[in-house]
Image 1 (cartoon, rainbow, N blue to C red):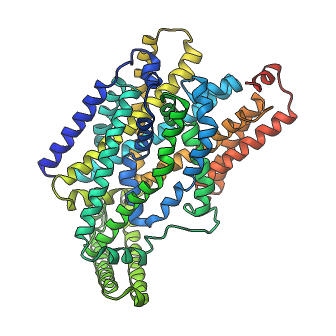
Image 2: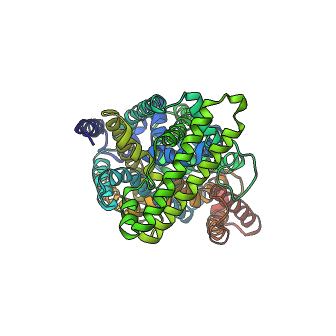
Image 3: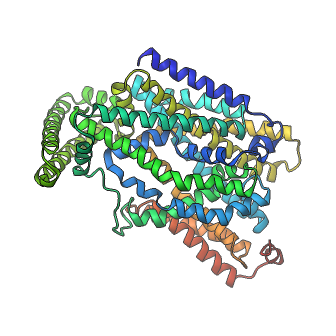
Length: 562
């Protein structure tokens, strides 16, 4: 990559890091370190929440998802506005007024210590896994650019991020998020403009090609538990997922607890409610346009250069045969797309069918190639995460490539910093201070927090070394979360219901997790979004039944009035 691109990357990262540390004032006490003294303005909190969502996973995984699967993924977010409205009148004011550090502190007040600890433990598991996946996204970029092993690439991103997080606090993380949101949106818009200028047909014809190949299909109204992205999975499963993520996940709760007031916390949530779906649609559109670009420009057989090298060296004859077939099918698709662009929209049925058939033929050959790569390397070879890195490093002009990579790295550092901060907060507040050392100075707790941050950073880096091979990173992170989120949400729903005892909440949570685990093991065809619904419903039903039929202690009855 050109040295100017690297200069842009280095200058931007230095600016973000130095300015973030400069803003880390008021972090000598744990309230300043964890919650910025509850003093942040609503717009900064809202942009920080959006920035956490628009991590490097979004820049790489979602755009890759758009290139391979089209716009259908946007249905995943249909439940977000509903969830934000519900949270604005329920959990947000509830937790903000409780003056807690974590969402799980409230569960002890409402139920008991073991319910709090179990819920916090499940959060640590889900967020620790997801944090590793977030680090994996920029590591994919470096692996694709330099051919480095994933371990080196992960260390390059993970180590400085852990150090940055240990020095700064939530305040530093939040203001870094605001800057990276601006850079991300600017980079995405610039890439769209470049793509529209370089695709050799009119933008309207480019969208026709994408539509003929099935990449512009947004709505799927079929009700299938085995289909991941449908209107109903987004509205129902997505609402449960978003309720749990934005309402009970400490990485998000910590954001709105740092707002100045309940009203400002609500306003910060409305930013996501209004802007998340349009912005997500723009990101997917980038992927769709990259797909169209490579309809007219011959794409590689493997987006991942490491996979291509392994197959070429181990099976040269098979590689050559597949590559020849691939070139033929790609040329056929190119000719079909150009024929479609040459005819009027009112009489293009035959040409659209030809594009669809030729694109399916390309997909068949690529699937065979990926299967061969899996046989050669012994691990999954889905390379959807390498599509955008390949395009950025080989097709974008000097300067813009550096801007995009800077946005990816900065997004990863900012998102990971926020995740590590929430993991450290839950570890120290819900476990260390609660069970190990209830009474100590703020300076002591800050030292423990920084050690905890380092431990979680190492754990996340280990997870990141293999997360990139699991498929689309945006799916991986949400698959990790969906395994836990529904059951955690169920406990908070029970907390808002009267006459629910601690025994019902604790064993309801266990029943919810056990049910989700059983469904994922015995019915793997059930789409992961439905895990959120299943977990929440089981927790509420089991917890409610146990509270009705099992005797409750006097302490439990007293907590019901809290």
